[in-house]
Image (cartoon, helix red, strand yellow):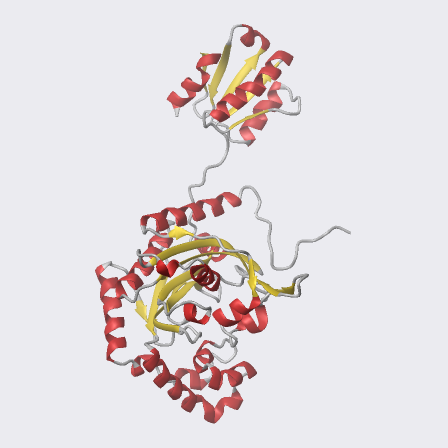
Length: 422
């Protein structure tokens, strides 16, 4: 019996992994342009971090975390998301003490959630996310959204929609919370058990319920926009004005929520509108939050960020028929004829690699015809042909595979010749 791959995971093989490398490199380039620096946190943390940082009432904490005890009987959890871990690191290393604020960070790495696997959703998945910590300023909200849109559009996606909302400040949230309780409580027994448990703990989460989203009370629930105080209204209007100034198209959706208590003001999601993408169209979610850093032991610190799945991004690119310009194949393949030429090919290939070329040779004693076939399979741009006779003269024959031309080149000039052709 062979050992099978765990359900909800995947092997990313050569031929596919290059696309991952491309989008991850694009993310790093754009973060560099926006002056966000990479942070790498452990793949597991103390369970308490996610209970406090993500929220006891969330599906993630209640149903989806991979939690285990180590040999010291400490409860540890594979990270289900990146924000709490980044926040913990921010507190651990006292980044709040830096005179340069905001602290702007990004991460790319695997996350783990025990959920039902489906198209574009896995139990181990890779997230790219950013966090801007330390300032309350509508312009940083706009900057985060500009970075997000720049990233997706730079990859060639066009059928995307940015949806924004405001959750208001604490005062606005409290007024809305009371209105939600009054709205749902008379008929809460008609809702799922999760919604019933959330009614008094976190009624905003009811609006995010997938089981009861078609219930008639959902359509008539109080809008947060009706409960925004003057400060919250002005903040949201300023964010929208910045988005307009940056030529970022968006739609205001008062039903968009972020269910955790510490979220406030700007909330957003990015949707794919590509035909055939699937029922779950969300590509990315994020928003502004206060209280998270305090909750995990730090000082009062505002923040804003987003997180997206690389898997779902690649699925959206496929749905739109976007072909990424990934590099494949090799620059040069060395074909040899004769034992002396074969021995010399070892140093020739190494010299080419040291000069920055992707170079390859035969390792299976194939005949010349078989070596040329191997060069074709590897999409070699050039084939260097070396026989014992050529070796005696210190020359090689270089064939340009796209043009079909061939030139005789001195062996010690091979690197310079190929550099000139590039």
